[in-house]
Length: 244
Image (cartoon, rainbow, N blue to C red; front, top):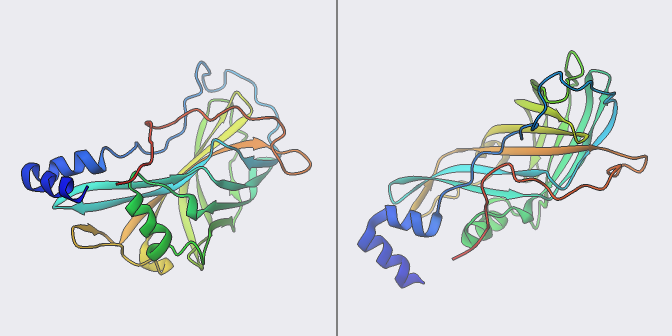
């Protein structure tokens, strides 16, 4: 494989190397479309109560790399997201989420090994967490199919370091009794003592983006989804992790 990589770089240059071994990064996570439902076309019911992250939830990173002088976006994601939020009237009163960091996968096994080891030390810090520290005022209960954008403030803990962050999040109430929440959170690696992962042929800047798409479902008294959930509907391009 090393000979193949060397030949790709020498004969075709960085463009062929990126096409063969890096590929096209998956699209950004985004809110799905409430098909056939226009804002206000369905009368919403009450949303107060506890909502938990279901199997359709995703969290991960987007980081720009300079590989052989060419820009490429590295993306890693996981569906192992847990936690929930509490809605009281028109207010998101509390939210607490956790991500299994060792399960984050990109399209490169070598990158994932570095992520679990040197970069995030997942054996020592297996979880990244977010806890809302200030209620979010929605103003009104959104209609089904209506998207809203609000500011969230809370504590993000990664690699054992907790810092307060503020970011915009978008949410949409869907007709299948789910609420989807989407956010892109810019971070500076040094704020969480995350070492810069640059090496000989790939250079990485000092910042990245945490991207999140949460599919929230109503919880029962035990804090579990009140109804069985179907397999998640993809909201981005097909993405199959692999390795060298």
